[in-house]
Image 1 (spheres, one colour):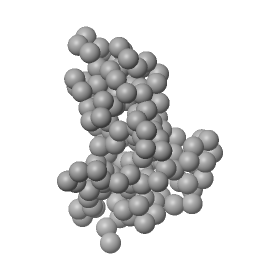
Image 2: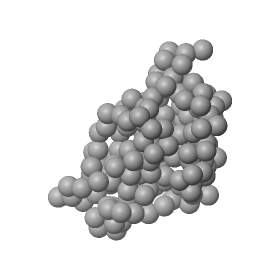
Image 3: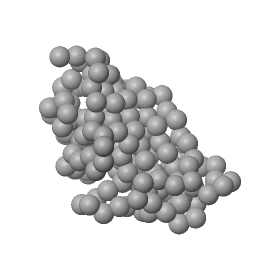
Length: 157
């Protein structure tokens, strides 16, 4: 991937790459091991405020949750760029895991996860296509409606 092209695509989408997230506990935002980078789970934060807290389908609409998942993916890209120094070493997104806080009986997890998946493909093209898991959970950190973690392939140093 080319750093300039990726940043331009983000701007073309009317978005801005947020500041890279900082770890708030005993973990790091990104671990690079060989040709793989593992991005820690991201919850949707804007200027330090959680977006759309609550359960999807009860407190948060599916549409808002999909938007929150897209925000999480954008934050994951910011974390990745901060760790790698640029997007130049990014080869492709391999796996995306989307956790959706939802009440029993909720079944639209894939629709929520599409927010993250579609953002990655819009920004990275074919290199953003990935395998995915969309999983329902009873709660997430800080009451988030969604959390997104990614595994990506990178050019080794």
